[in-house]
Length: 142
Image (cartoon, rainbow, N blue to C red; front, side):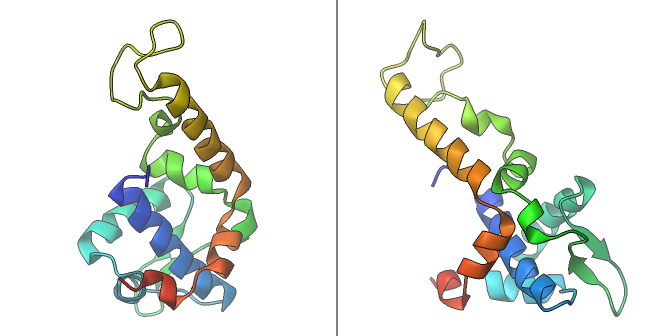
């Protein structure tokens, strides 16, 4: 996968929160991590970053948890990826070189450019509702 582990965990956690959203309830970090099979402290940091960037909301206290205050189809995968991994994933060199472009390409530049563009298209065309409704517990099993 081209996403960082943080991004993978974040997307998995958001689909779990999305399921709770569809059931009209908030969900706590322990339950999220149990279902998504992600480490609790690491996932909590990722989710707090998403709260700061207005992708997600949270409420403290006994009736608290994570939730969305907008519809899931309004949250594109690209919005999530940009917050967690940044926009570099859609422009960086496949070999990690700092001076790679069409005028000065690395050996993989033109092939990797196709992959990056397909990744960008995929992220722009998928939303959290699509991911949430397609995901089920079997997807999280290792």
